[in-house]
Length: 386
Image (cartoon, rainbow, N blue to C red; front, side):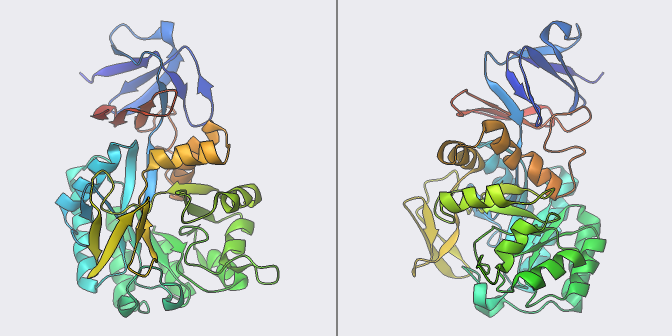
């Protein structure tokens, strides 16, 4: 018989509204219902949270590494498992391990590892994010320019096959090195195409959105900026309702004032969602690591190349939530949506991810009222306790 669980004693946020004096009913790893605490079925195992906050699990669509593992350096099932486990300690219940620009061989190995992770049911594994190599050298950021190149027929075929087999795939491309026809083919195969690391202007960005691009990768970073005569890709992301956009909220990649302007300006239904862009040091005391043969230094909350170029971020999702809530003053429920509901919407997964509604996966986080970690649950099972 399938075990039934009832989580009681929490202030519960289902992704839409708060519930007090309620219980979350779980059956077969999914949300059965939210009921009054007095209506818990007699055959349910009752778990009392003693006043914690119960919120949807965080969804991170850009995670390069964690727990000492970097996907580029460890494109294996074990590497993916290590990354997912590390981020679960910060409330992330679903993530896209992200491969930045690398060789064909590393990408093929990563896709194979992703299919293995799906088959193995690795807790927290949602799919893959391939960030490059089809980007703009002019906006390369920390990506190795020697590995950046145009998308060819073999690249397209491999990613189309991956999207169909994996089910959840994000691909970041720049119009400089990917055609609108290629974007349409990827979108038709089920991939979520994201525009990033590009210097194109507003009109070109909008035309790629019409061709099937659905998101923008780390808004403001490695892209043409918002100008008064040329709105750039930042302007396109904010003014185009069909586009969603990821945002790194560590205070280094984007100034809080710019974050606030973007959040107030964004046209819907597309939303701005949080990403960490985390690297291997998350969850460790590492002070440096290697990326494509180059040393990345960790200091003062930043990860940089020797010349100071930012190379990913040194932040977890719970810290991102706290930063936006405390520094920008956004209501907690809206920040929580940025970490759960909105990324689920961007990936087309809102039917079962991002909100604790009947039928959804029972992925949630228990937090203290001060937003410190309590525990992380994936599919109704506790995978981490602080």
